[in-house]
Length: 303
Image (cartoon, rainbow, N blue to C red):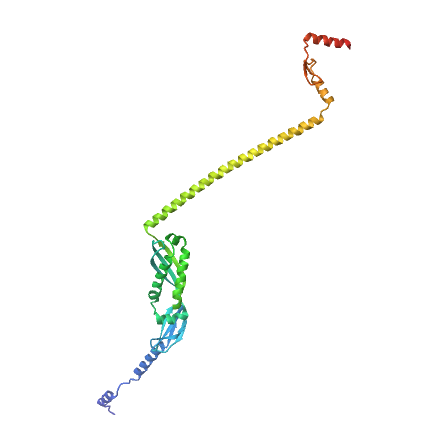
């Protein structure tokens, strides 16, 4: 049996190549593309804003896995985490001092208001809303305080600015978590004036303290003198009272016999030259030594 090579070659050339695998490949690729466009994953801390043919849907997606219409719907994730906006600010105080400050705003988007925020403002809400409102509120609050009050009442100024920010931004779905005034900066002239005032106040306080100390010392010395004088007076009074009590006791204890006894105990044997009469007058008794001896002898012989 012979094989015709030419016939085989002819049949091979006339048979069309198979395209079945190409169709399956295309179908599989299309299915994958459709599948990958049929779902979305919203990251944690975000809200998924659903766009249907470019139009913002009223409903939104929370964080997690969600199905969507392929090629028709698009999901835009918007962060609801706390974000920080820092910026310098310039304003004029109540006493017309130029005030430069650095401020920091902690804010977040409210999840329920995210779709309307996206529809009305877009994703650049920081530039469109937050920046100008922060500058406006800062200028308004600063104008109510003097430069010195801005330093001493910084917390009150910050609270007022935060309240004004909430009032203007809450309607857009922006909630202010915290407002901080990092620092205030004034002109060199004002800083010099503040320093001079502080020095003067310190000197005045020092002078008042020294004067108070002098008054305290003087009052203490006066109190000591009063106490000493009072103690001395009380001592004198006590001594006088004691002496009076002693004299009274001595007077009560004396009698004629006791007095006579004491006179005899103290007599030295010499007749007194002065004696007291019955009328209380003192009488001089002129006695010399011879007369005294004669009288003494006579008294002895008489006995």
